[in-house]
Amino acid sequence: MKPKLLLVDDDEDIRAQMRWALEAEYQVLQAGDRAGALAAFTEHRPAVCLLDLGLPPRPAEPTEGLSVLAALLEAEPAVKVIIISGQGEKQNALQAIGAGAYDFLSKPVEVEELRIILKRAFHVARLEAEYRRLQQQRQAADFEDMLGTSPGMQQVFQIIRKVAPSDAPVLLLGESGTGKEMAGRAIHQRSLRKDGPFIAINCGAIPENLLESELFGHEKGAFTGAHTARPGRFELAHGGTLFLDEIGELPLSLQVKLLRFLQESCVERVGGRKAISVDARVIAATNSDLKAALAAGTFREDLYYRLAVVVLRIPPLRERDGDILLLARAFLERFAAQHHREGLVFDERALRALQEHPWPGNVRELENRIKRAVIMAEGRVIRPADLELATDRRADESPALPNLRQARENLERDLVTRALRRHGGRIAPAAAELGISRPTLYELIEKLGLKRESEASAVSKP
Image (cartoon, rainbow, N blue to C red; front, side, top):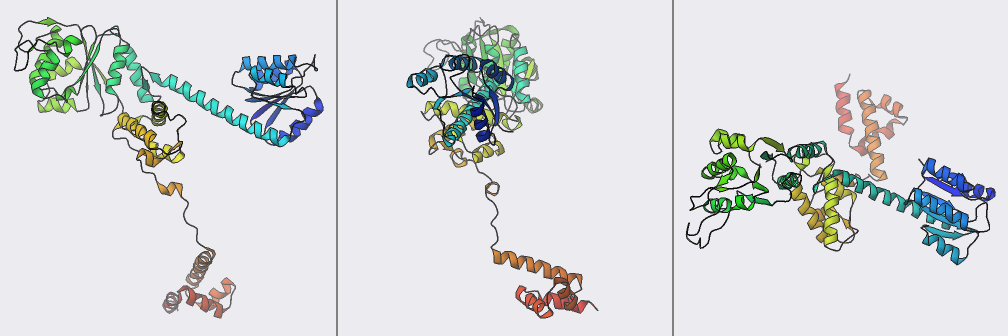
């Protein structure tokens, strides 16, 4: 469908000439005054308008045209209005541009120059519309710094909205890099504890002999090097939320102490005998199979059911249809700004490679690859190599064409073979079908290497 172009001019002859010059490329809408212009614009919403400043009832002055310009921009600030007027004084041009016009041309207009300006105006309008669409999509997809329009992520957002206001423990399940901690933060930010601390600890990243002290704190002299008493992560999370990542790595001995906290809301420091009351919500996360750990006896069943009051699975990136490019563009915008490389874009092969990659590292892998690409890209275009992603070259390259000689030989071979096969290898009827003489067919058989095959066929047929 042709893009819509609104032409506003009180001279009917000029409108006819302009329509004739431009209707091959655009759907030209016409108006001769302010009322007609605003009515046509309201109905059709064209992206670009050509506007004469001299309109009735005062065609000798620019005031009416400037009023139409203001009305169009008020109705749609993104519209590109190109002023075309016989009133070519510099003052009018400056006034129109200052009021928001996209460009200014004086009559008589060079059609080729106008075509170039129109092409650029429509291109800019399309880019701006696409940018607004992406921004709106991102706003709709943005949930507490989490992005996602896929059904799986929309369900995650819905569950977070429901569970956040309560104090119920939540167990987050998902592969490494899916964003479990971000989901935990989103729950915290939407809870009544949002003004309290969010304390996160990875239970698998701290040696077992230090983990108890990190979680529950220690008293002075509890062990070598404990020169002062120190609160643990539970106490630091008082009034807020404690996020226990990789809960499946928690040793059985500490599982007992965690279970006690969930039951009694108190902790006991290493080397201490005093129960310390702590008001903290617990959100746990794991990428391991806790049901298998229950069967193996490495995770307590009673603790599991205390933690899994609400279980929320974060889908892997490969299951989030449509989210890969949304996230990729968001990361590109962020890292490009950080490295002062605004204007970077993905080429088509990079976009295809992003969508085809299986993403075993999920969102974290995608984020790291985009960060690398921003650093490594040459120029303003990011290619698959910048992302360290392979691309199917067969999709980008057309198969090599045979030259004319090869094509002719292939066709001759096919036709001769089919004729010989149809006539059981007999030369005379095959040559007659091909419309050539018997000597010519013998020459073709010899040239194409088909002689033995034809002779064998002839022997096999009576």
